[in-house]
Image 1 (cartoon, rainbow, N blue to C red):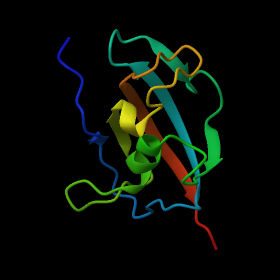
Image 2 (cartoon, rainbow, N blue to C red; image 1 turned 90 degrees about the vertical axis):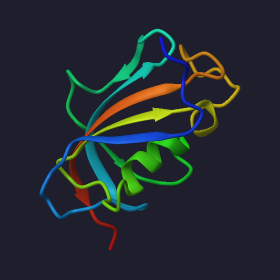
Image 3 (cartoon, one colour; image 1 turned 120 degrees about the vertical axis):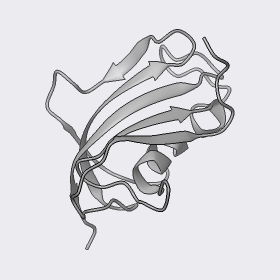
Image 4 (spheres, rainbow, N blue to C red; image 1 turned 135 degrees about the vertical axis):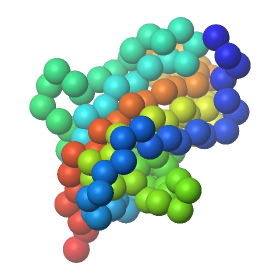
Length: 121
């Protein structure tokens, strides 16, 4: 396994032509899976269930997950219909605290399909 990155890495693996973007405060509908960089263990997933719908806040999620949904890559913000892969170092994840089956200081990998957005009014 390659060494874990020390900075957040965001990739859009499928790019949509949908113009709807996401911002803090919006409610997003998505499917996702989370894996440990160290050994590929899946620690969470919404696939196999109904898509999840969350109001995106700065304090309700790990920082890297929020950045994956709101920050631009190559001048393009994420859009509804995009699939994103986010490699999240501990500083943007859970840091030096263990979280359930996630060991302390873990680099996390999320694959996220953005299915919809309800804009904040």
